Image (tube, rainbow over all chains, first blue to last red; front, side, top):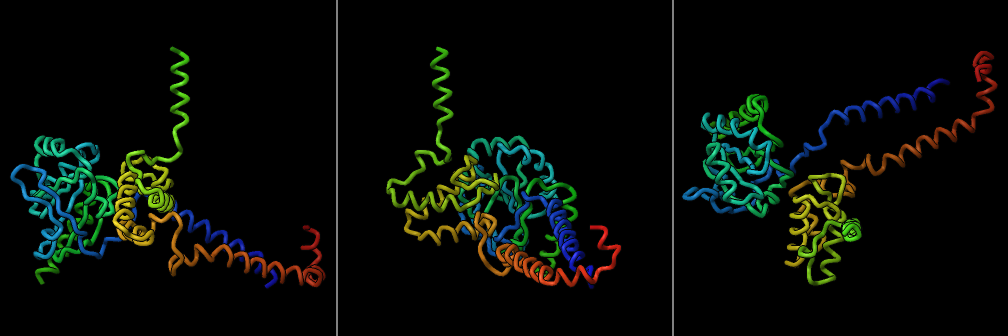
Length: 181
Length: 142
């Protein structure tokens, strides 16, 4: 009993070090989105592509099919890295929507013309307002939206093959099965 | 020519420490003051340890614009902050709110002080009898 008061601060220090050490392993750039669990915020963007469909928040909601909403920009180098992955995801039949964030429309058009357009609809957001409504911290960012138009997940940074196979594709499959069942 | 270059560099050095650009400010000084006050409390999510008032990141600029638009539209300070918080979460507040999840953050240091102080007082109160009780070996180590 006499030694306990010496042990207690040491235990406290050890606990503090463990807590701080665990904190070091977390990436401070990956912030939780308060929009997860909430409907897609209101926005209505003009189509980026001539003759393309506009990107309206309400169109992303409620047809039962889970969707991905990807924010990109022609000036964003990580987006270039991510683009082949987006093409692959679209080829798998996923409902993929694009938002060209803080980008001159002609630059966005040239970007997609050179690399292919994986999106069902692309909205142009030159002043970044829709991005702000989504709480965006940078591109690329991808939102998983369920069949009822509720945001279920936010992926920050490029979608890697691991992220797609390990997280996003299983999540979409689960959401799709839930809507069908 | 050289003098001119030096003068120009000095002018650059004298740029204000805030990132708000002249075309961003509101005409109404009272509204502008409120906008500055709000902006000082909001974190720039791109650079993270600056407020949006200090940061020249494009996203900080967008958020400053949003704050000013909402103020000009007649929103209260609290409504503007709530709007930004709804999109970016508590992280965007440079001063964390006081609630259940941040209880440890706010109360923790004081709790440690009270507990440690209490232990210390108790120990000091028992110092003399403790010393008498300790075996000789332990006493010699000191």
